[in-house]
Length: 126
Image 1 (cartoon, rainbow, N blue to C red):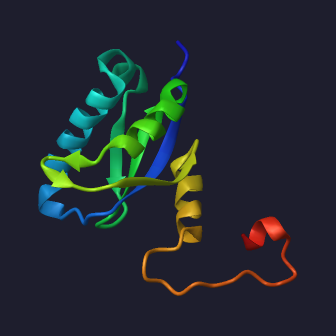
Image 2: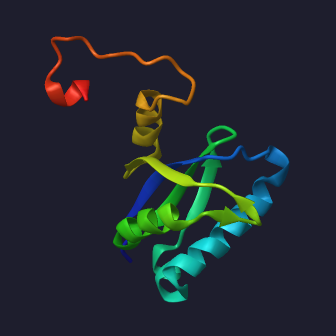
């Protein structure tokens, strides 16, 4: 039997998610993904909220075949459990370890801007 290939997506919410409401948020997120993807594509994507990184960021696991559609569906979600919010994809990877490494590169809101060295290639400076 062949193992399903997955992708891990780091997502940032515009609203803080309290630890007490994490379970309700997870169920509401699944309901919204069903609404956006439809039941057949939802079950192909097989999304699973793996863990909360902090009060605004979490890691979502999805099937490789539905990875692009899952990212698009997350962008269209504007409400979860009657709370208005926005969901932004920060990074994606085939392993959680690589995603955790990318997490360090993602600037958290309110952190000071740090420009790369001027000798860095233009793509690194943008």
